Length: 254
Ligand code: PGA
Image 1: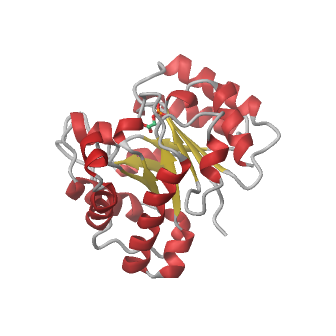
Image 2: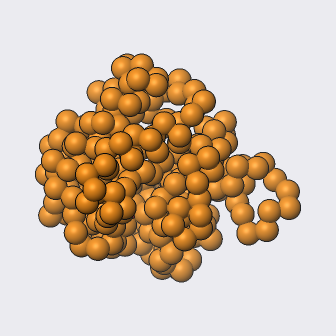
């Protein structure tokens, strides 16, 4: 059985003080626990240590994730963050391949693949994003497009524990736009992702990998996505920036 997962991607929002406050509010809102739901928050890099401290001090029922990593271990890579630096502040998850990084920062599938390998060698769980732009959706080739991304992003990966690799399907046209995919749209692609993972890693491993939906997911619509067989949770942007909406989504998943 796969545990559901609700992950919050704060993107480039929340200063250090605001991030600590949000983490405290969330710890409070979830103080009764999260049942079988794995909850992850992914603040900006400079907020990681502060949020990590809140998690420790309040025994908060959520894990810490980063939004990006570099694949080298150390060295002359100005502005980048190495995996052991994430480890040192308590991050156990890291988003990779988000469409905003692919679009604005030219991250390729090859980069995403290298990042996944590096993270896994540090026992940090990748939340590896994929998803099609609007023109691909309109052309009706979205399933093939995403399957191709999955094949490239997972090339040469060894997944010994399927709980330690997470995929997030985020149709780009639904991110931050208020336009959500329907639950059936999400299932169509998430089902194809699982079938592809089964071809690559075997059915048993594929059955253990969490596949999240992302793109204008919110308290009002998350339950509909979670009813679908191959949708195991949500990667949440806008609605993760307030403790009440994010905790409501966690509760809807419980
Ligand atoms: P959104 O963002 O929930 O604000 O659409 C989701 C994401 O990009 O991860």
